[in-house]
Length: 250
Image 1 (cartoon, rainbow, N blue to C red):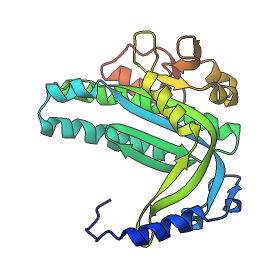
Image 2 (cartoon, one colour):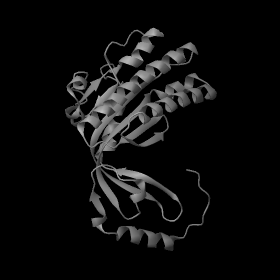
Image 3 (cartoon, rainbow, N blue to C red):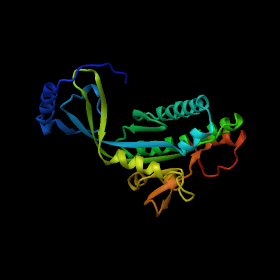
Image 4 (cartoon, helix red, strand yellow):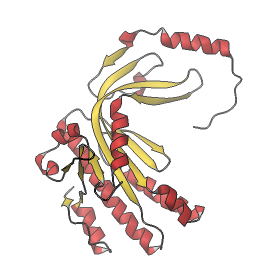
């Protein structure tokens, strides 16, 4: 967010801190599903159950040494643009955040079927990366690998920022966001790590067909998969990559 200069006044800072810390704990309530952002103030919050998905490029530092900045910009723009497009294709999507070459999303999931849909989004992202890599190869650019992590759990949903300035953002407080990021960091990290990493909680909420696409990783203490979309993988195979074998229809 672009901001402009304003003089700092520590007395007003003390007043704002006092107002925030003196707000009632009763303002933080349990809620079924994610409420509208318009319901948030600087003194309330909602405990909600969410599913979080992280996707991040592996070896991005090495990638930056192989190409000029304009080429890197094109690679990152294509990757970020289309990962977001896939995520937005899930009707449960609530929030999307971009942090460097990492993208993470919060899904408003109130039942197992909706959690299952997030796993489907994950393997569509996996197929998207395969499609992108075919295009990158044709341009003689470096291909990319990603890790994808998914977790589900309770999070505190609050509004935070500089009161009265218009500078604010939604903040998610709880282990679920950190755990999804941690699972993402394992994806494709070593030879034995598959691309998609899923917590035990998420695994138990998936349907049997999707559970069958996952296997237990003893080293990471989670489930992982190389699942891809049948429809997207058909395009991949027809256009230059016949290596993907584990598939599932979207």
